Amino acid sequence: MTLARPTSEAADANAPRWRPGTARALSVLALVLVGALIPLLGPSPALHGTGEAAAPGTAGIALLRTVLFAALCVPVGELFVNRLARSVPGTPPTAPRSGAPWAAAAGFLAALGLASVVSTGNLVPDSLSDLDVGGLYATRDGRLALLEVNAFAVAGLCALSRRPGTQVWPLAAVIVAEALRAHPPTEHSPLLGSALTLVHLTCAALWAGGLLHVLRGLRRDSPAGAALLGLYARVAAVLLAAITATGVCSSLRRMPPGTVLEQLTETAYGRVLFAKVLLVAAVAGLALWARTRLRRAADPLTACVPARVEVVALGLVVAVSGLLTALPIPIRW
Image: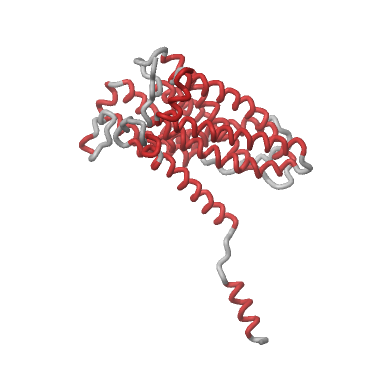
């Protein structure tokens, strides 16, 4: 008995243990895979029974747009929170490691994939010979697609430079390009639609990316971290109001009030939009829960629990938004 116990203890000591970093990385990977399933598997259920035809490669385009939106949120959120941190006394000088270069690389590849689809007339290319890169300069969508590719490339270079704050300009160019792309000139009052999308996308990127960066930089027993989270929560309330207002206005432009209830159940766009509304409502509830804990809890950092769930829900919102942009729009003027 005396010999078996040390052997057992030695075996337990030599057994592999999960490190917190490994478990966290696996959790992030699992969430990424779940988020990727939404745009990949979403088109078929959304279109089922609507009588609408999906464009070629809808699932792939939805996934690429999801990656593009996520790649936009990360650096925008970092710039936003770093700016907020300057007004919080006692904030540690060392910020969490920036994910902007990796986000720019992912955004560049996603924008490149979307540009390849535009170059073939919005058809999925079967080979490199199908691509017409020169033709991108001849169309409005092609020029916007090239602008996004170049903007992400420049943003990556800025993120690696001594002045990472300069990436705000190429990131702004991506947002403007997305706003213009979503509302072609053939649409009724396209400038109004682009303005609504511009505000909606900017506020969404600040909200999702900002919360992610705040949580990455939080440390235990950090009054400055709690103060920064509280400051972010106050700004996020304004962002949520702007997102809600612009989202409602954009939806009513595409679905007149008299047809909203019908289209929410009978069109693919309406079904996915309804799912997005439910997710945003859940996110708003989590944000309210976190803000209540910030105000009333003995330890304000307990607000991190609902805030982390909120980040996951925001990731799902980004995935649903990517799917929404790839589905046929029921425009009824």
